[in-house]
Amino acid sequence: MAYSKRLNNRKFDETREMEAKVGIIKRADGSAMFRIGNTWAYAAVYGPRNLYPKFLQNPQRGILRVNYNMMPFSGSGERVRPGANRRAKEISMVSEKALLPVLDLKEFPNSVVDVFIELPQTEAGSRCAGICAASMALADAGLTMKDLVAAVSVGRVDDKLLVDMDYSEEAYEDGPVADIPIALMPQSGKITLLQMDGEISKESLKKAIGMGKAACGKIYDVMKKALKDKYEVH
Amino acid sequence: MTVKDKEIAVPGEVLAEGMDYLPGQGTYREGDRIIAGRLGLASIEGRAVKLIPLSGKYIPKMGDTIICQVIDVGFSGWRVETNSAYSAMLSVKDAISEFIRRGADITHYFNVGDYIVAQITNVTSQKLIDVSTKGPGLRKLHGGRILEVNTNKVPRIIGKSGSMVSMIKDATGCRIIVGQNGLIWLDGAPEAEFTAVEAIQKIASEAHLPGLTEKIKKFLEEKTGKKIEAHAPSIGEHSHDKGDR
Image (tube, rainbow over all chains, first blue to last red):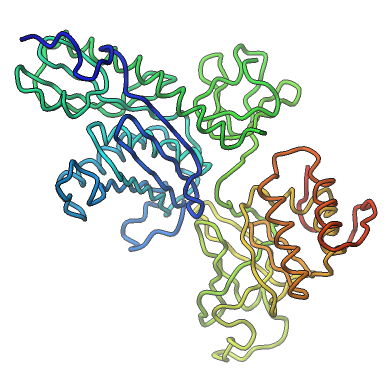
């Protein structure tokens, strides 16, 4: 049976419902929340600040440190074991690399910018939600950035291409599935994160990335509005 | 021009198109467009477009008067915390005029945990910072309390040549020192201190709104029950501070 209609009645190029808020963690230097469907991400930015141990310091520019963490109760009911694991370390690393191209930390040699991404509830697309929240939080922290970073997952379920997969689609069993998280700078359209789990043809991949770019445009609008709402004169 | 004056711009947003405009602070040019390089308030001055920062940590600048805390004592000076990404060095020769014997105990001048008002005398490219306490108004702070606000709100708290902070001082009778790094020291009667703190926090949270002086004046009149006359810019304690534009 072909996948003719999405299990959740969305259009194929439609994301889940989104919500964004900036400045929710008062003690942090910058913070933001991003929700897409049932996936919630909170990000807090601290710094630029002192960096120790000293061997981590870079005298040329400040460094970025991203920590991605799923809370113990954030899964589907099974307790997520707290603390770092292989998956969390990888996602921390790719998130860091997705965010670094927009940042300019030359003004802050030997220092660090810490980003903490916490997910209280997840249902697929958590690294993308985390990157969106983190990029808003970095902007809120007043850092020099040439662009924001918007991220979304695209994919293929059976013979259909779609945007922002949820868990039921990732776990679809009646046909091949590919899950492709992408992050990009919405203004220039340059991609900063591209991963894939599953298999897909070259043509379909190109098409899927195109769909992802369009979706990131919509996500960018949500992020932009959230940032302006915090500071706008009410 | 795609952005209006006094509008919030987010990173990556196109501020102006065409070569008629010049990119100012916080912006950059790409092709013939001027793009926001940070989150800020757009400000158009003639042909130049710049962004006024609304958030962010304190960046040490030469000549700034800051409030800092002693975190370490060495042989020939003190290390102080500046509320920025970097700590600063206060050497004995920039702090004390009297003769000090080599190896003498310098903790009775400043000890770990003390707050001081100091001026930044030098900042290197690697952000090594020197501060000095030789100068008018620069000293160790005794008693009082420290309040932390965002460094970008400091110009509003000081006001035009110190008008805002003078108003709070006169209304509450508190002694107040505002550091460019966002640390504020205040000392007075408990009730007065409380009112001053409230006023400062009100300024910090409404710093981007117009008509702030009037609002704070009304707030202080209500709290203290005193009439506050319009404030002439005072000269003196805050003459070396950088106030509102």
